[in-house]
Length: 202
Image (cartoon, rainbow, N blue to C red; front, side, top):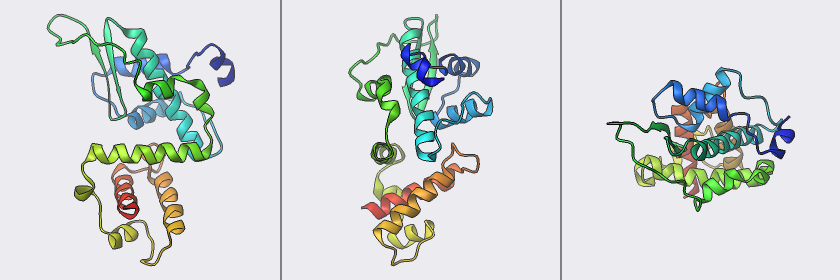
């Protein structure tokens, strides 16, 4: 189904996402938006590999958001940031400021290129690594948010003599288990896992 839609650059999530955004004037995070779409059974299973499945869901959402951003101008502005997605209406006294699409934004360029949808596992790992660096900037400096090595290892359920490969393997397992997008996920535990992993990478 997706292959046929890609020929026409037709993203099936464009209108469902617009409906969600129009129904609420709140600011969304991308993983909350994904959970809302999953709750309404709009998002199908896309890949047998959990990491690639999550990546493809995220890709479709970001692609739809960037397409909507351009489609809604000039009457509306859709702010597209992973931690702050919101729809702003033009109108008297609304405080609406005219915006323009930044066509030089590398993130927009990435998600508007359908060739990237078929990323391989290694590509996804590199993207996740880049995301965690940006995530750290969002939540604060490393010195303020990371835990010490011993506590970090304990948070990941590892012994103090754990090898680098054991740490990497356990981090991937814990990140997949506790990611907020997953049914058993928990945002607070996921953040603890992120902080532990960042501390151990320093």
